Length: 449
Ligand code: FUL
Image: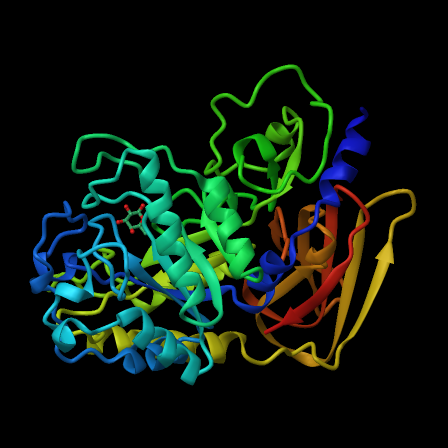
């Protein structure tokens, strides 16, 4: 197969409906890590913790939801079960759960309280159900997969609409020293059966890990990646590898994933966007001696993630009493205010946008003529991602007072959303030049802030 044909196929691999919804409508959501670790000051419990220590006497899920809403987030994912195996809901399948917590005399259901608070405030709800379970005696046996699916089913069927299910790929030893072979195919089928609109996070399909927990962006962020590295994803094309060789040594969390340099070894391609996960504080769980990250760090991460063709899953850990810390609440509000003030008003709303296509080429350019000359801080570009991802590289220019184009910035991929920060630009005309692409480029929008 010719490179041109191969790239055209890659450029037309499309998202499924939940992936498209996630990228476009819910790219920014919250993680909430809450478990016995909150009380033992650990990051990973070993499953021997006494459920009696888990007692959030002032639990206030509405406080969480209002806080994340003030940051502009649209969804919340609660750790229904972390690696310690303790369940935050009234599960039928283990005693290592709220049943043995003093909270509400063993009748508490934090998954329900959280799902209800989300519903009340128009926030989507999802959960993290750790496959690695350091408490379950079944872990390491076939029965454990039944146990896991039973718990998954409880969470998928009793708490209303679920937008995102977070699988952790961590696979350590259980209480009997054995490791588990996770039956992800079965887990995914269970999600599809009960919540067909949900996305799921897993290195091997759905939404994949960006490769770090520091909010660092990839050089080029592709949604179309080798199927062989995402074995539980939907197999979307069959292509002949362009090159002899193998994908050995290429990881699904590599920052070059999806580049021509690695898809050319692939026999099939799939659509699997990256999710960036990071915590507002150094730990995933609450530790008294830690402080929230600076507003600058969080805002810049937002620009690089939501504005870098990934989703952004930002964790906020509740304290022992079951509330968010006031410092985190303040930081979330500052973040929401900053996002609104910097990216809230599209200055190109009434602008004239024209496209000049080059003949016999995928190169093209978009000219944005603003009503008046003004200072500009950002450009937001969005490909018609429902139809696939095409742009390999672009450049941005501004018109200067001598009617000449000043080069401002260059970039690689665009995808669902690319936010480019500009420095000292005052102009009434911007040019976005697509310098290379895999197929004919179609943009959903060009916005200017
Ligand atoms: C990791 C886990 O081991 C951490 O504890 C945390 O939950 C993070 C989001 O994922 O794999």
